[in-house]
Amino acid sequence: MTNNQNQPREFDAVLGGEAPPPAQGAVLGGIEGVKRRLSSSNVEVGIAALSEALNYGNAGLYVVIEALKNKSRKVQRVAFKILKDIEDPQVELALKNYKFWRSFEKVYSIPCGYSTTFANRKVIEFDPTTKISDTVDIAYALRIIPAERYGKPVMSSVDKLQILLQSPLANQIEALVFGLWYTGSLEDYTFRPVMDALLNAHEQLSNIKALFIGDVNNYELGSLPLVYSDFSYILLAYPQLEVLKIRCNSSSKYYKYLTGMQFSPVRHENLKAIIIESEIPYGVIDEICQLELPALEYFELWFVTDERYSYVLESIRNFSHIFPNLKYLGLRNCIFSDDMAFAIVDSPILENLLELDISVGNLGYKGAECLLNCPSIRQLDTLDITDNYLTDEIIKEFNQFDIEVISERQKTPDRYYSACE
Image (cartoon, rainbow, N blue to C red; front, side, top):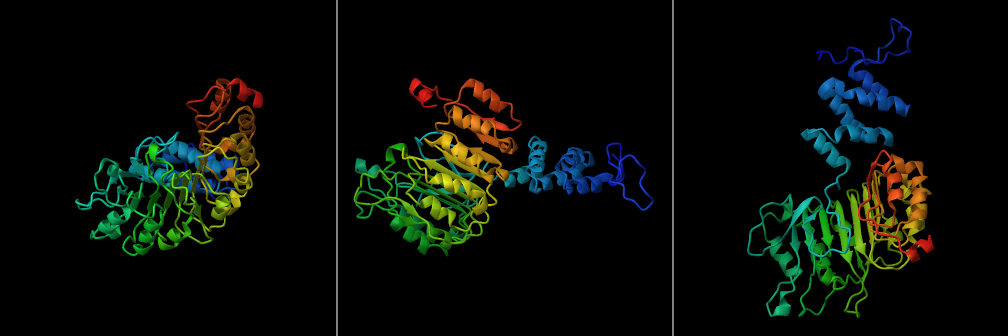
């Protein structure tokens, strides 16, 4: 390899086509030529230049990494394909930033156990008798293991939090997980005591980047009443927060408590991800859409009940205007997946998305045909249609796309469902 990376080579383009350039003209050779063509308004010219970049060693590799931020989604996708098989620390970091959620724990059914990872961190139960050591790669869980039903004493999440705050490393902790947060002896079964404790501790927990509210076993679902907790208070108290995950079922056996969540209009500069695995009270999606979240890249909704959330569809169509940097949209466990598919293809949101996830739903022929006929779907990096009602023939059509299609565990359409199509 020549030492001068700016000298033209056999694969370099010359400004002016086949005619010799004027004496004062510029030769689009070397790595500078690749950069210049990448900045062209002609996307195909940029893609062609990108395919040549690695011929220039580390300088070319850096150009491909930078192309992950290109204004063109096509250029981004080509850069991603080039980089995804390269083993290099700076490449791995760049791909992690490109899709920071790639190693998020993914579930395709109601969870049957506690989460083992959260926000790319290992989840471990906080032991009040043990000192905290790792504050970066660990998410500490403050859950109540319901041992009291066997006559053993337990400690509430609030009490555990107070002990955790006594650690000299408390202000370095990055992630916390709350599960079952009350004991049978407490008068208040709601999330309010934990929220109050979190709000009061915001100065001591000044480095929190990820919060998971409601990590439970499946047999505990329905035992986590939120009582219309306004999570905008959490956003205001923790301006450094990047990931907020909420899991709750409002079918609480403690019927005297109304269960749900609220958001008030606030601005948060750093929140990258919202994950809600819960029955969603009417209007909450609209409340989330009133938040100012310039950094939001990942929005996942898990529809727990069979209620038809038709009011969500209009909000979906406006997501691209509300969250212009959104890269992942997950609309999961949805019983109106076909309608959702039509809402998505009618929206400009696909122009910026890297990944669309409509798994664990009832997507059938009509919705699949709508997606197959949408050119913008082919510009995604990933389409997840796992666990729907799609035939092998339809899956084959999706697999002809030059993107990653995840389509495992399709359910067999029964006679009734087929008739509905």
